[in-house]
Image (cartoon, rainbow, N blue to C red):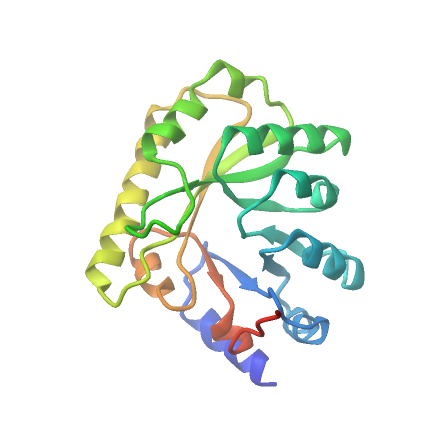
Length: 225
């Protein structure tokens, strides 16, 4: 019941029109089932192999989001079922997703990951690189992916103003792209994925419409060696 209570508390703080991704990485099937039984069907994993195992064991109407850094050689394993891939940070990865989506006769929605944090450890593309990809002739050839929006992770800091500034910069860039990009069949910018357990309220205040929350729902993460 504790997990369900946590979920209810989070949902009370999430406005309509915002998607909550329950980050279930390292969590057992039983915990995910508890959240599912409470009526929530959107889950995020950061390892493809773990997501595949959970997909096979759990109800098939779950929407699985890949939220971790993605290795190209793993795309094929989740291509049949993944609902959204969050952290795409290279054109090569997009090409691989497109190839595997084609093999599965699907169009796979993706988010391009923008680097907005000050830390070196965070993955992501610069705003200029994102524009370059989305306006390139090579991108137009990708028929089995759709860029549904952008994703970003703020710096790991106690400075709430810095976090807000980083989220705001991505929101402004997102709006700019929506206005300026030429219409294309493989672009439909609707999703701005920003905010995790520690900063999702700041993200919501700065325009996020998708948040990724794990420990605030499931409790502290189980780290596996």
